[in-house]
Image (tube, helix red, strand yellow):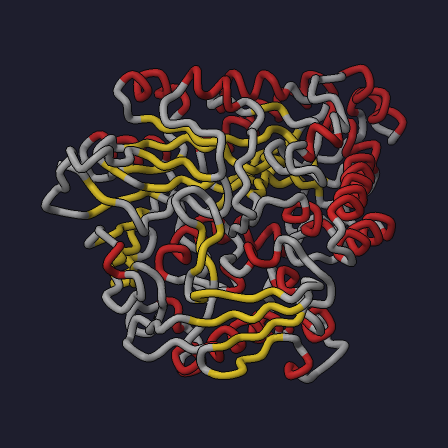
Length: 550
């Protein structure tokens, strides 16, 4: 889930990381183990086995929302554009494009390319995929990423019934025209995002479960899926029909689906894995000394959602009391241990403001103190009718299976008991069940994380509009919605950023979520892996250029 302007950025805390860990960078993509001048020889077997930590909920690009799914999609699909090794937007299936002077019309010229089954890929495949994502029957949570297109929102919300009124049209097999309703500086980057990937209409409509079976999953990326051993592995091979197949060095790319950090570490140390996310924090020092730990910057925020449709979380005083009663510094120093920064807002450091050399977070400032404030928390809880926690209902924290999430939940559980006198339970669920619970508001408090889809504050801001596809809090505010609409109604960056700063302040004042820290991303990493790109947003690794040394 990613898009970017290709601007390098400064990530808060990266200097600390550079001092602590190897492999850190201050740009949008960390390139690991790049070859120097050919002195490193390639291994005979070009296979990478990467643990992405969970069974994907879906491999249908129109439906997927998580980074686990996005990682696989990035390997097996390609959009009009792609991010290169430096995190810059470069031509993908579109060989070139023109943008009108007013920024409202994009004309993409497609290169000669094929689907993995050998059929030609055309502009109609993009038109079909985008309009399918917008079709209300598809129920795409990410349909709003296409709302910049003329008529897209009205079609998705049912105000218009004719998809022909949506401003995307295949003029001929090699030309796609897109008409925007307003100039959107981030749109070109969005064309690399998963919701905007092309789809083979014949494959999709011939089988309702087309994405579940390698025989029916027709794709167009550097790799193609050849086997899905559920809850174990997804096996991909080099796609010989990929337009740039000559660049792809890997013979095979295997995604392991192990959600236990300790099990993944054991597999890594017995040479059954080459890389994987989130190793146990207690092992960081040892892994660093062995040169097997890489920590990258990540444009993302770790937070807890509140179900604002349920008591007592429909009261902003309760939400703020819980948010003020936790020690974020203790969490990042004692549990996560990867240089994370205690959150002081929702949108992290590392995104340019109206002036590209200024950081959105620094311009917006600290919207709440990340330091624990027990006195204020107790005062707010008492005002809400729960003095010293008396009468507070029994509630639970929901998180997906992961040792780190469990430890954070246990720490917060104890902080709330000690500081506020309230008791909460902890409920752990597997990834797909957890996602369903959030989507259906079947929770009290839920652990969540949001990673930028592209480098612009809107990737965090538009998620929380009233009834937004990825909101999952039940919260809404007309003034917030108005500010987001104003930002989306102009291509003037000064006006856009001002509106988003205003929106974020409204959001934090009402605290429908509790920001905890701004992420980094630790990886187990075999030093023999070369030219693996670890982006700061969207997916856990880019393997188009990757190879394995002897």
